Length: 214
Image 1 (tube, one colour):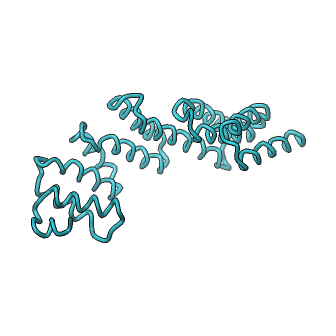
Image 2 (cartoon, rainbow, N blue to C red):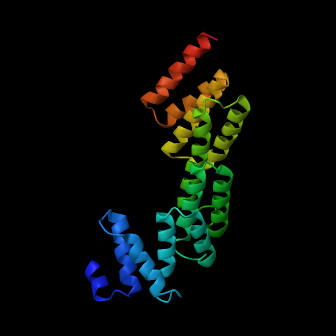
Image 3 (cartoon, rainbow, N blue to C red):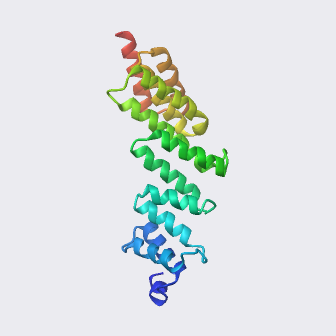
């Protein structure tokens, strides 16, 4: 692919394909240079690679505004769905879960509520939001109740996967922190039923110990 660029340095397809290979395989080389070449040599997207290049360049630069601009410019691009998910990840890392949620809602409107990739990603986002509350030593009972509600919302998106067990585990710990031992027990039992592993058994034991010392 590098030879193709050397033979025709102005070819948008050759430049994009080399950049994509560098990024995908972790090869040496400046992918951004080739992406910029793709964009500058075909600003009208006649060859069909400029949209891909803009999305990938924005992702590599972690540039939310450029990613949003690319979505507006190329809403039907085959990279648009990934762009929504990447934007949601950027917002979640801030953390700004409200904006991250908005990105998924817009993506669902455009690609359908049953899109598998979006459902998995959204379920992961909701679990991440609840997990952050679970690990926050300064969280309040009210905040933990909000996180439990987020997990209830999450369950349909992770149903049938190991993430469903994880969601119930997080929910169990949130209930435990709120001293609701009955619900904590019920939730961890569901985790164990889905996927029996040591950390869930340990949680079950932890609940039992706290119940006897309350």
